[in-house]
Every structure is written in structure tokens, then in C-alpha cells.
Picture (cartoon, one colour):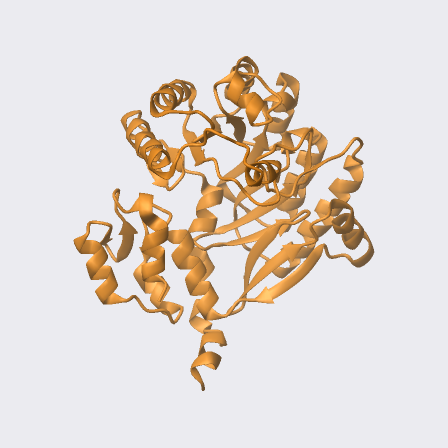
Length: 397
């Protein structure tokens, strides 16, 4: 067998590799009340939505995927978007019911719904909880009204605080997102804002550096010389380090590059991704990973909402493509995802994919204090995580 053929060939011993990460369901709701200028997610503004039609399509797709993966224990459901808090509670309940019919649930199954403060009200959140949602992730993004307007957000700080209080009264687990390295933001302002956010936080916080993505309104504006006042790389790096320090001191240390949690409150759904588990994905533009026998497949759904809906209704399948992943790709995905975690990657799992670690480079990185081996794992150190991309280039042989 040639080296290329060996890299493409399935390894029967990897049939259960996904179990190390678990099994999850991702459901994409593609609709928003407005498109944020920094957002490159698959989201669309629609004036009318036939929620019964969408629920029927979600049910059909979940049932189809359940037939392919019978008996798997479902660890997590994540309703993302878009703005899933625009979903009718009946739609959410129907999705959860369909998932329960397709797979047995773990005793501690995590069911997360993303929400924006503008789409929150007490009755709706209570209905989501009754439908089975037990965790909410809120897109707060900033605790500064001027910056919220710059980011195209439709809520104020006061509305965000009120929405957060409502969520906290309905759900035991509440996370929220913040964006830093915004225009004209300095370290002192970010440290104060982050400290204020942590005073609100229940158990989980995601802090993302603002990135200017092609194809977004911010991307077009930046290309024309707009978006002045963005922090340079050094200042952004200092804000990242400030984030690590302040969150750790508040009892919410980083467990992943951009995510912080109290011990035990890590996002179980995202851990499935980072630990290279399997996840079934339904909805427009949703990407999944399924191990079927020794093979691992990448799935991708039709991106346009109407195209996805029409494909499900006419063909019984909303997927645009299903691609067999060669071992080289599987190894690279595991490296890229697992090294984002503070726990790092399991070296034996990586090697089982036919990959190898460049020992000399690992030793050099260790001498520099950027990586460390511990308990059969390789992980980036505190000093290494800010330069993770450079480390990955060295490790991806």
C-alpha cells in the first residue's frame, strides 16, 4: 500500500474514537431580527417564518440522522444561529422531543439555547425551560452603550442586564459572550468592563477578540479605511492576558482559548467539538461530523434557508455534501481543536490517526516554556496559549 493510500484508508480501531469526545446534536436556526456588521455566521433577516414548517423539517432531519446512529447516548443539544430565542417555544419543544425519540439522553444532558437580550421575555424563557432547555448562552457582547451601537446590537446595557436577570431566574446555567479589542478600547476600560461582567456571571463566560471577517459589513468598511481606532496586535494581546488574569482571580479560569468557566460548568457541547466527538447537525449551513463504522464523515447542509427547507421536503435530506475524511485530515482536526483546550490533546489518540509528533520541535517548544507533556497529554502552557497558532504550525508536520 502506498503512503497516500495508507493515509486515506480507514483504521478499524478508530470506529469508537468518537466516544472520547461524546455525541451531540447541533440545530441551526438561521433567522435574526437584524444582521450584525461583524457577523459572518449563516444568519438572515426574515419578516415572516412558518415555524410549523420549520419544525417538521427539523423533526425529519433528526429522525434521519437517528436512524444512522442508533443507540448513541446524546450528551448535548445546542440550538444556535442566527437568534434561536426567536424560535417559538413549541418549536424548541418539538426539536427536543424529536431528539429524545432518536437517541437516549445522558442523565446530565445539556440543552443550550442561544439568545439575544432583545428577544428575551420572562414567559418565553419559562416556556423554553419547560421544553427541556437547561442552559442559555446570551450574546451580550459589550457593557457599553456606545460600543453596542457600533457593533450593531439592538439592545442597551440596561436591557442586557434585565435579560440576564430573567435568564438567571429560569435556568441554573447561564453563559454570556463579550467581544474585546473594539474600536478605541484600552486596557483600563476592558479590565473594568470584564470585572463588571464577572460580577454578573453565573458559571460561564466567552470572551472573543473582535476579528474583521471578509464578506461582513465590517470587512467592507475596514477595506475602505474605516473602523479606525482598532487596537494593534500588542494591545490586543495585552487584553487577552488581562482576561486570563481577571477571570482566573474570579474563579472562572480558562479551559479553552476564549472560554472561561467555574469548575464543572464547562460547555459540554463545545467540549464534544474540541475533544473530537461526533455531532449530528441539522439546519441551513450546519456542519457535522459522524463516525460510521471506521469511517468519519464531514457533513454540510444547504446554506440558504429556503434551499435547505426545500431539499428536506422534496428529497428527505437537507445535506448538500458528505465527505469522507482521510486519516490525515482527522489527525489535523484533532490537533487543531484539542490544543485549544487547557487540557491539551491525548498523544496516543493523535498517533492512532497515523500522525507523528515532531519530537525535536516539541522539545524546542518545551524549552521555550510554550508546551508541556503531562499524563499522556501535550498541552500549550499559559505562555503558549497566546501564540497557539505558531505552535500549531510547528506541530502540524
